[in-house]
View 1 (tube, one colour):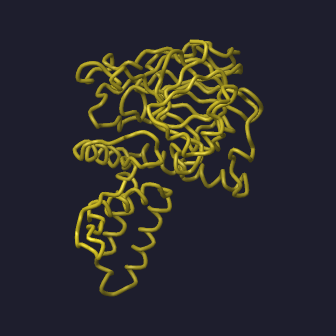
View 2 (cartoon, rainbow, N blue to C red):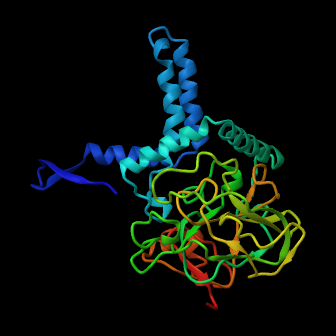
Length: 352
């Protein structure tokens, strides 16, 4: 995605292409967006500590700390080529997202959440001695079906570092976000100011495989300002209402952001593949009604390591041919018995 503008004319008589400042800036931003958020944050904090020891820079060390705190939040709003799905938002919405994150981040529960995420990631590295689960290590035996009926669009997620939902947060490394879109690609009717405007809101969410329910939450409200750019800063649980199901030893699925009081199962219940366990909602840290799904090695959301989910009985389509550019996705394109999903995929149970 490099913009070119004519500049000087060479001996061939053709204008020599030169990258514009805007395109260079975009490439730098996309490169940073592809980096681990904790590395970006740590890098600027380190610069702040170094600046504190250098006389002329010491009075300005706070600038590095400020950038280290804000930049990772802003980079989360940047869509890159690797994402597979456009997430372009206006600068006004980007500002709202930043303010929402900061407002939540300085609450006691926001601080606790960040400590749990960082601590959980560190513990996962220790547990696996740095060799975290991947496509080739610690692969799960559970074969999953998508946890819904009908066609949904994958808006976040993949199984490689460039395409990951949140590579730096180990528990969510291989997570996915799903929404329901119409023929125009819109996730809602009208202006999208009401929860009921959204096609996904209230849709049944199903168990992705047989198993035993080990955790549920159903009491959190659905944030009543979907699509506004603001987030539920008062929530104590960023996953919102959710259900955790144990499938095999050390293999648990999580469906999150469920609708208030829609959970239909309790811990200890045995569930079968396709059984309705709740409804899609907008609880927790959610910008609009959608389903967050992940497979993990522990029932604990904070201290789990994400596992690479393999889907069976799933039909996949895209509006582009970008899967062929990524061997890990392309090689399974024609194998409907086992699929890895990627943002931009339209997915549905094969028998729907």
